[in-house]
Image (tube, rainbow, N blue to C red; front, side, top):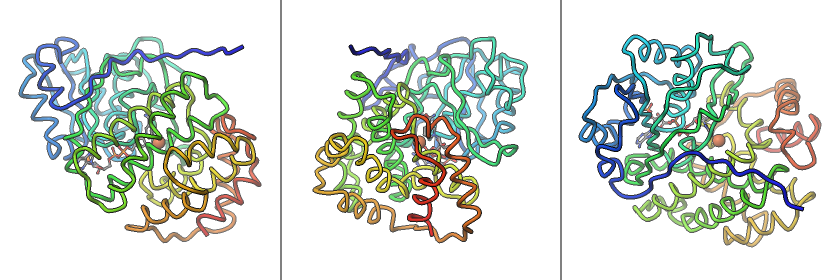
Length: 365
Ligand code: NAP
Ligand code: FE
C-alpha cells in the first residue's frame, strides 16, 4: 500500500518576463526587504525588472555572501525590523535565497541564528523568490543552508513556512552566468534529482518530478559539454533545477551533500562542484541497492554505463578543477561527521563511516 504526503505550497510562475508580467501581483505586503548578493541581481537584469513593476515601498539588502553565515542573515533581519518590512523579495542564487529565508524568520523571532535549528514560534515573513542560477531549487524548498562556524560545517534548517509563497522563474536571468558557474550549479540540480530519486524517502509523487527533471537535464548535456548555452538549454536547466527542488522538498538530500559540505567549508569548493565529485561513486554504491533505479537514471540521461557517467562528470568539471591538500585524518573526520547526518540516514544502505571514507579517498586523494 503506497503512503505519502506531497506538500508544495509555493506558487510557481515559469517563463519569459514573468516578473514584469506579475505587475501589481508582485508585492506580498506593504514594504519589501529586497535581498540580493553583491552583483548578480543587477547583472542578471532581475533587480531592474522587479523595480520596474514594484509600486510599493522597499529597502534593499545587497550584502549576502556566498555560503551565507547566520551573522550575515541577522544583518538583513535587523534591517527588515528597522524598516518595518512585512515581506521579502529574494533575488539570486541559492545563497541569497537561503539567506532571505533565515532573515524572514529572524525578522519576527527574537533568536540567534544557531537557535533556529531548534525551531521558532512566529511564522516567517512571506517570500517571493527569483532565482538567477539554475541549481539549488531553493525557490521551491523549505530549506536554508547556512555556514555554521561553531560546528565547522554547512547545515540546512527547515520549516514549512520557509517555502517561498511564490517563485518567479525566468531563464533569461541565468544568461549572465559564466560557463563554470552554469556547470557547477547544473550539477547541483542533477544531484538533487538523482539523490531524491535514490533516497530511501522517495515516493511515487517525488519520483514523478525526479524522473521528469533527470530527462530534461539530459537534453542539456550537449550544451553543458560544448559551452554553447542557448536560451533553450538555459530554460531546460532552470526547469530541471526547479523540479530538483520540488523533489528534495519531499525527500531531502542524501550522502552526496553530506560529503560535499566539508569540501566547501574547508577547501572552498562551490556547492554544486563539491557534489559532482561524488556523484559517480554515489551511483556505483546505489547500484548495489537499487540497480533498476540507477539504470533508469543512466537511460534518461542517454548514457550507456556507469563509466560513461563518470566520464561525463570528469569532463564537465575539468575546467577550474581543484587541487587540494587533505590528510587521511581529515578524510576520516569528514566521513565520521557525514555518517551521523540525516543525509546519510536518508541514503539507501545507510552508509557507514568506513564506506564514506572509501568514497572520499577514491575521489579526492
Ligand atoms: P550562489 O552562492 O548563490 O552564487 C554563486 C556565484 O554566482 C555568486 O558569486 C553570485 O554572485 C553569482 N551569480 C548568481 N547568479 C548570477 C547571474 N545570473 N549572473 C552572474 N553571476 C551570478 O550559488 P548557488 O549554487 O546558486 O547557491 C549555493 C548555495 O545554495 C549554497 O549555500 C548551498 O548550500 C545552497 N543550497 C540550498 C538548497 C536549498 O534547498 N535551499 C539546495 C542546494 C544548495 P552574487 O554574489 O552577486 O550573488
Ligand atoms: Fe544542493
